[in-house]
Amino acid sequence: MAGNLFARSIHDLSAAAWFGGSLMGAVGLNGAAAGAKDPAERTRLSSLGWGKWAPVQTGAFAAHALAGLAVIAGNKGRITGQAGATGLTVIKTAVTFLGAGVTLYAGILGKKVNELSGAGAEGATEPRAGAPEELKKAQNQLRILQWTVPAFAGAVIALGAQHGEMQRPRNVVQGLLKKHT
Image 1 (cartoon, rainbow, N blue to C red):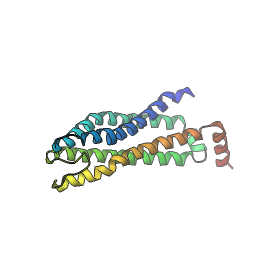
Image 2: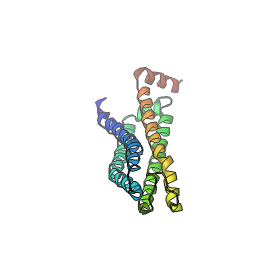
Image 3: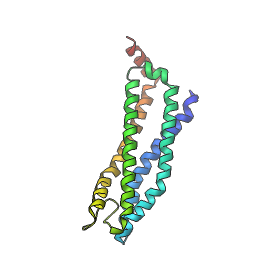
């Protein structure tokens, strides 16, 4: 049982970093940057903060993926033998990859916003009247993605909790019996 403790801990902590970092960025960092007096500083400051977070986020994704593979390897018998476990694993993997893709795309948009930061803005994700169309488009997409990213991360955490519930002895037995009857 303790054989997967390290992998499970890394898996959960890295998902928590993804969720917490993205939510803090949307609420705290982007919100605080909107308070800058100089409109050109609003996007620049937000971009600086997200740039500092990006290596941590990348490391968290890598750790999450590696730990996830270790957890799957340690539970392959139960995953293939317990009713519902394979499907849940596939769903959680798909949600994780989609969320990682959305997070990567948000980073690409953030880089574009940073490159155009001299045009100024109302906030990190709120364009200013008269801003270049490229900046407006990127900011409008980021306004949605700043909430989509933590939603994906939260879904990954919730699906992990569902996996945990499936591992309760009573649920394992019921799932094994259901699959083999």
